[in-house]
Length: 162
Image (cartoon, rainbow, N blue to C red; front, side):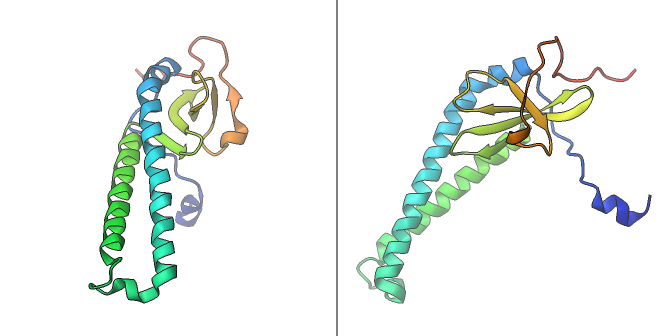
């Protein structure tokens, strides 16, 4: 295969771990609490961003003057935005390190890496669901979700090669 052809094929991820349905379900209570906290941070970031836009729209470049009455407010809001953004990024990176992908904070949509018939797939869970009950291919997305088959071991780690 030529070098050009290889670069066109999507890379298969190498997650740090893969999850069984049981392991993913055991992770849900703490994950749900974390997602609530992350959503709160994202909502606050939106509020801070709106306030910064309001200040900039009202005062224009004047607000950047150190002696402007609202300059300390602008600096505090910018600092809060930076802090929230850093915390959000760190938390999402920590989840990625666990092989958990946050797809949408507003709905609490997350994917866990798993295997189905020796294919790397995502276990798909949304915050309003009581348990992990769906999976999809890595490129299938939420619209491609399918119920997890009832047969034992349908979504689990493949057996190691001898």
